Length: 405
Ligand SMILES: Cc1ncc(COP(=O)(O)O)c(C=O)c1O
Image 1: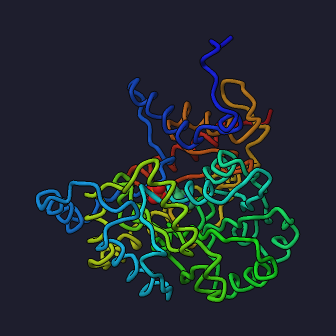
Image 2 (image 1 turned 45 degrees about the vertical axis):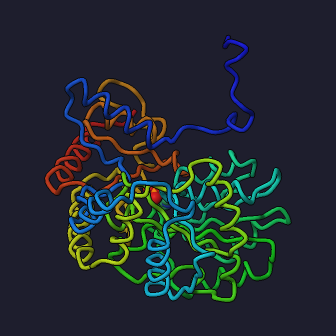
């Protein structure tokens, strides 16, 4: 029994730690024990932050950009964000409608905390990025999970959306390109979803565009771009983590209605204050500087995606559709369920399969359960060609050892 003082708040009672983090942690532990582990569980690019961004940060430090800034970001960064939204997304946000934070994660957290009351519902589309449902719960809201059919990358349809709206619905959380499915919506598809949202004036839309730049096929449209008349009900979230290989710099940004941005800024002012001044200098350079390096990154990632798909096609136990965007494969592993490992254990779930692959093949993947959909595995392909190839070959070999129970 725990000591009387060791009681966490009710707010945390339903929250779980990040499942992706747990797998990475186990992989790190096995690696520390000397096992050869290849991690396909990380949600980040293996590329270095481009040199011109690194230099901008160093210049920022030497030039004295080392003090507190305005909570929502420096004027220079806000101007760069304003230009980015205008040039890339046809979205015109004033500085009072823009906020920078310590990663997109903090923006999501602040937005939900600033708007949800007990009983309010947030619609989340499965498979979903692990933190959405947890953040909604921590903010006292109720996540309502919609699970579209697997075809066409689990995309939400207007009918499904309409069927899940109640008088308590406060948010529709959209993430495209999607982590983990890679789903990408066309302008027409977003406009059709907007037709439903338009009928319900209380609903806000959170458009998580963080994978906007990691695109192999098709083109990107942001939700507010597809439905300009709803712009005042949309929070457009983005960041430099995935677009510029800057996960560790912790810098995200958002555009939205001034009342919401103000509420988010109030929360931020009482928690972390401004995002790192040095990261702001770096992000300003990232957004204002050359973007051509992204073509090369996309080409390299596309090759990795296709290499991984062709190797994994050798096992009949995984069924994977080709993602048009982001850097994850979301593999249906239903055919592995019920099979027996060489050690005699029955694979009863995607969690069991992930554990088996880690222990038997030395490959870390994330079970679909973490993303609200089982039995699936998420495999990130943002690692060197050689290691990715080796990891996929190991997975195929380990799957080949599973036998009928
Ligand atoms: C869909 C999605 N949104 C937001 C984030 C958080 O990004 P940031 O590093 O800017 O906090 C991630 C990170 O993995 C993500 O996958």
